[in-house]
Length: 238
Image (cartoon, rainbow, N blue to C red; front, side):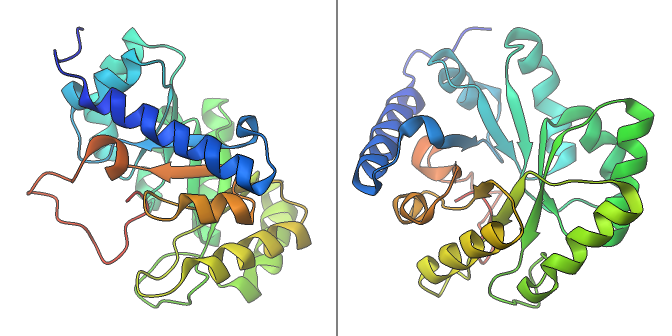
């Protein structure tokens, strides 16, 4: 598979990488401690190929079905890709998610923990798992309430032996994200979790300053979503 002749996504990727390096320097952190998740949601293979050709290998998708349609062929050509699910996961899609993704960032309820545990045992595959925390307590948004996180983690461990790598959040679109980033970092410290997925195209520098270990950047690399996919109130990958 050959990339398009004008890989503008590759130059955008270089710009984002430089901005991450700058933010890490300002925060006194090593760029090696921050993973860029290039969010390819709604973008097809011709848009993704220039980023792959530029050497990037960590990508995020929002929907299981969309990822199933484009990533098997891409991964056949680029076998060292690490694929993250960053959008909501329905329990009936858990088997596909375990089969396809290396990281699932959006675990947010007990039923999903139970189904994922069964699928991981059945498939003998163990994707890295994050808990999505609803730091803004938004009723329309998925995620565990901050005050319920410790009990959720304890149940997952006690009932299924499930451990999590870290936490993920999507701050409210109309609020300063920094308090939400700081809250997630504090929750991670309190619960002994090392990884933090937070920060998007507009605010990843602030997230890095607050301790993000993964930043999810979509539009700054791939451009605006196609017209058929208007943005939600606050998507996990803008």
